[in-house]
Amino acid sequence: NAGVMQNPRHLVRRRGQEARLRCSPMKGHSHVYWYRQLPEEGLKFMVYLQKENIIDESGMPKERFSAEFPKEGPSILRIQQVVRGDSAAYFCASSSGQGRDEQYFGPGTRLTVT
Amino acid sequence: GNSVTQMEGPVTLSEEAFLTINCTYTATGYPSLFWYVQYPGEGLQLLLKATKADDKGSNKGFEATYRKETTSFHLEKGSVQVSDSAVYFCALRKSGGTSYGKLTFGQGTILTVHP
Image (cartoon, rainbow over all chains, first blue to last red; front, side, top):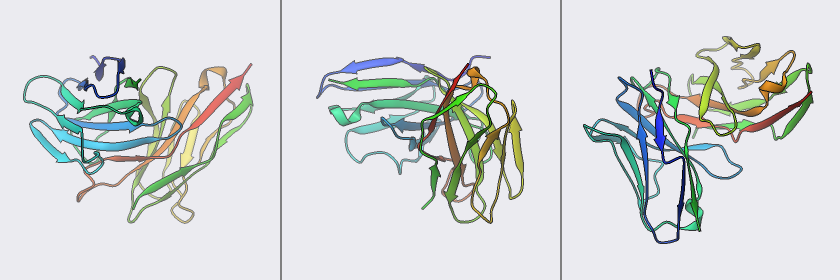
């Protein structure tokens, strides 16, 4: 049973470019959480999605960031016009339900903005 | 709001030494508490958890007890191994309402164990 898959594992973008990060949840999981880990910091919640719905985006920056989880295919975290401060590790986690269900984490995507 | 504070790292120990990593939290109500471990280049793995006061979570020789009176969930291991070298994260989760199960993490503690 494959775990949570994220790709790419490493992504380098120049300032002003777009970054697309993909997350394929574990089989049978329809809930996805995205977290960001800035250097020397813990993980911070960004957004929680269920299939085709954004449930909680209270941790997302108001501009340039968006997320989706379509009916078919992976969840996508999109960062437009990246800046150096976006350099971080982005982790997604999936679960079979919200609340008490365990979240399983992917290996992360390390974004570097040059 | 909810927050988690971990002891400053990094922590460096010799093999077979005793490990304590302190974790305290701020939250209303009765959150669930977790310790996650992150090995180099990998995602976070759940190490142990406790869902109510006085519960003790344990796994792989690690233990942590949910202490509501001191709002703490300190991680302990009696005899560490080189393979325990990793980053350890304390986290809490509120259930119900608009929390939606999202996790609030501490800043992480780097543990290095030398032979």
